[in-house]
Length: 139
Image (cartoon, rainbow, N blue to C red; front, top):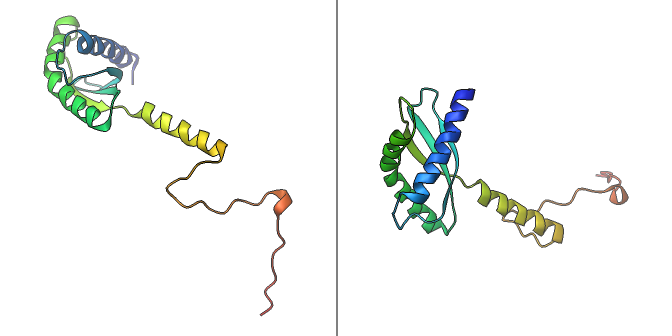
């Protein structure tokens, strides 16, 4: 990434967020936050990472609605920004916050001793006070 594409990414993120919150009237689009924009070096395409609050079904429906709204958003960006080329926008779901929350929950459960993960737990590693001497094979 260059400083120029970083600036354009930040500008696109702000403007797309503004357009989605103020100008797009699709009721399927709930509470959406544009978390990042990653443009190609030639500015032909951009990934728009969004965080969506709701159930898995609501998030899927919102992403579908956002993908449909990107043509309008791109048109609005062309009116608002002084860029020679407005990139084609590709919406991606950013689930980092959800994964972070899940990870924090697992850590809390481990600390509380209540974690029951999907995989069987391996035997605990011996601590210095519980080291057993090796057994001799007497066959």
